[in-house]
Image (cartoon, rainbow, N blue to C red):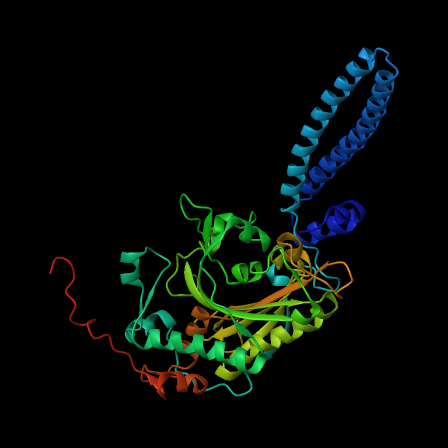
Length: 449
């Protein structure tokens, strides 16, 4: 969150941030009005306390002199009543201020693209298109080949959980497990990450700490009767591990990775009313979470992006890198790169020359001190110095369903099989192809048979 000093002293900068993000500036005006009234009350309260102290001293003097002090006592009582009323109103305004501050988004870093929507994101580069593998014509969409190979089952998932969920079966499930372990091993052994396996239910306080609440409550799953939410991303529990703690320089940088299942409602226009596993309510992801000293965060963002890209390089999947424009940044982000993998099955106007579509598999973001201030994440630059807010960053390393989509479409063969990327064959016992087989798929008896 932004602090009150920034809101008061850099109002034009905050207003610019809201403008380029496409957010309503009305909340800022309300916040400023509340803050002004709060400061008036605090000033009036200080004056009343001073006057009451003077009156109390006068009462003491009169009593020591054996004189009547009824007028002074009456005035002291009047001052107390007025002060109590002012403090009560100030406390209400304080709570209102804190609530409104939680709804003000991060200020984008200078130099990011300013744009009205995702069409204004800037493509920085494409990788892996120099030597594309030979593809069938046409390329079969992942949901059809997944069904043909009997490794993706949306129909049965609808019976257990409703739309927006899916079963992975046989080699599909094995491929998912292989990808997760491949990512964890790579980031641990080559990028220096420490493994964390966090709890899945998360408190409202933790969700607020990273900016999911109150902004994204509608997109999150809340547990009925509990102050708990299903994990929308491992960023939330892993970042909040250190909430209200003060780290030392030797503790930094923090580089944690976590695999979790993640849950999102995907409310609104980007819902789950389409076939396949591109937009679903539950998905697996390996998340990379970093804490660094402020002066190192820009450089760390570039390194974090490279770490996430390495997954796609090893899998030999074509992809591109976008720098997000101001209006496409997430609530807490000051600067973000998106990595989008190429899925060649669908003929989309925004795909490469060979058609297909782009699927986001990672967002590498620098949040500056925004999350740290919300969650009380500080470090002490030196043992004798005051604690300061550190900077937080994260990236998916990477999200699984869309990687699965890209593999099923990019690595498919004319005979309907799918080649296993060489990098993950060791995790599948050396298996080179997915040929598919559901041992009960052809013999199951449906209702009414």
